[in-house]
Image 1 (tube, one colour):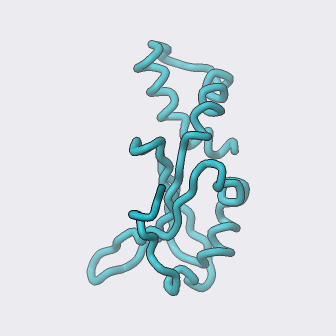
Image 2 (tube, rainbow, N blue to C red):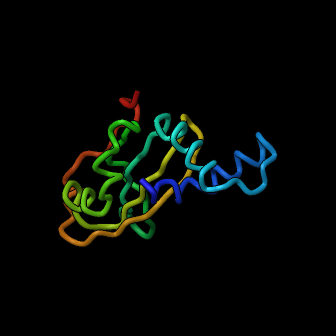
Length: 124
């Protein structure tokens, strides 16, 4: 979970500055806020897909915070086992508010090519 805190740190620090006027929160303060924030977050897993002379990001999966366990514990292994190789990104959100993104590039066959695109209208 530490890598997620590190990923969220800029978002959390900006929140401390804006809401509380704390220019440099401590790691302990960030952890405390993170523990409250994380259960309210969601994540989208996308893969970079070449299309003509450009690329697009095909949405593959959506996770509420309580569904992210395996993805958080071993993101590279989870992505490789479930989606194969390629260039992936995970976008984290709190509601509609974007928090952060991180990229992963596992090797192996591109299992994701045979998977349907996430229908974002089904996300609740």
